Length: 217
Ligand SMILES: N[C@@H](CCC(=O)N[C@@H](CS)C(=O)NCC(=O)O)C(=O)O
Image (cartoon, rainbow, N blue to C red):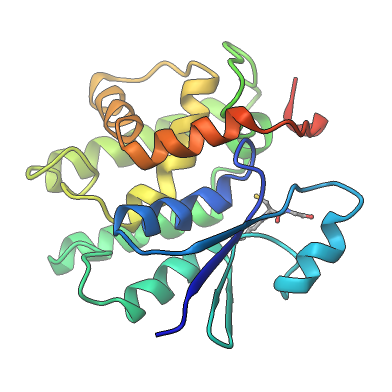
């Protein structure tokens, strides 16, 4: 079997990179990692070496290049079907796909105003017009999933699935900006933070030296 290589950006800032990285770690896949510090003079040529979209993350597997965080997770789910990447129950799986797609394509106000920065504590910053609406919708998704499907664990659908990987960067944003949440959402944040691989990512992010000023206040 070909080796897996995941090309990612800075761990401090690259929310899209975190998703497949965390999913691969959680399901115990071995992979090599290539980290490209973004927005440096060399980044463009390094990105185009690996990525048709010139963006990270990209998964390299044999001759195949898979770009886009959700496409990578779907590819892995097909390639390694013996893991429960999605919930087993069809209704739960459908919802998991809907909320993953909603996360992938939405929440622009939150993304623009509260960029991921797992090194910083930016309490109270970023609360621009429209951000609270995004936060409220995310909390509703989390509450609904936890209440309806979360009985056999701490994750959205009980056990860890791609949906949790998709929302993990939001968890880090909520911590950085000290976003106030209901108790179910707070417990979910704590459960995601307790994942050892996520702590590994944060520790590596904190050790990075690069600063991208657009993602700092
Ligand atoms: N929809 C893509 C978005 C990827 C994306 O925007 N990646 C950012 C880093 S988090 C990037 O590579 N930026 C580099 C650039 O735009 O030069 C995904 O889910 O993978």
